[in-house]
Image 1 (spheres, rainbow, N blue to C red):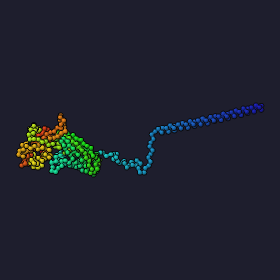
Image 2: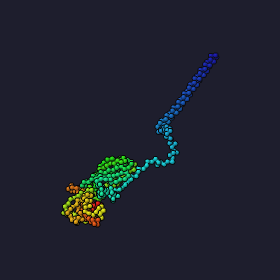
Image 3: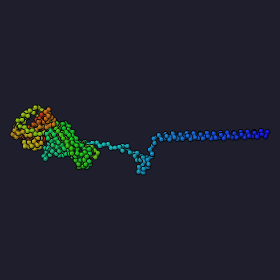
Image 4: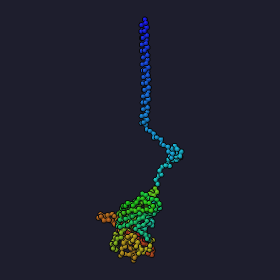
Length: 362
């Protein structure tokens, strides 16, 4: 019996020990599961942070705020100052409108400077060179020489203003003159006050004409563009050359040019001097390049005959330059102070133009 009690105690002790061991294992498993849950939560949280970080890295970043500058207030500080200003306040100003001066027509109708260079009728006038035009900005001078159908003109432009002139340029508008022309380079396109630039202009008369070409001078002064249009004193009489004829040949050609429309006749009062042969001969020979033909009926010294030719650069079938012959008969009435002028050429408008040119001289 005693043995039986000891065996029961031993079995109970073994059973208790076994139960205790099982409890310990269960507790350990529960702790492991808790650790696993915590690790899962930590990993999940870390994964969320990583995805957010990558998303933030891919997104465009705003520029860092500027450092505070005590000399340049923040935009918000300027808001009140500029709120009353229009946006147009800061717009670039519009370009200045060009100033255009067209003096060409006025010069042809009666300008002393133009007349002196074109014809040289006034006493002491220098037909070879002189000032053509002046204004507060520029002075334009001309020096010219003509041989046959060709002309050589030097244009000088001086700065009269108190500020520099920029973008200086000169061009020729030949208009209806038919002048063949070529401009050389301008010596300078920028002029300080008082400076001048020169440019060579080569001309050739290609056909008869009774108009004038225009010299166009353009420049910029203090940001304002200017354009000045001037009459070039290259009138068709510059291309005339005296022609020596015998009295018989003059009479024959005079008769040949007697067809209607080829003659221009005008009666006018003497205005430049007396209606005498001595005065008229000097004007015709020196200013219009007419060769006086002696031996033709002179009406007792009251009639003068002469011949000249307009030279052109146009060539005929034989390769020779074409000329237009011009014949002149001038009758003088000293007592009445009047002239009667008859001009005949093969080109009607040349007859008219030459007649008008001679009338201005007498």
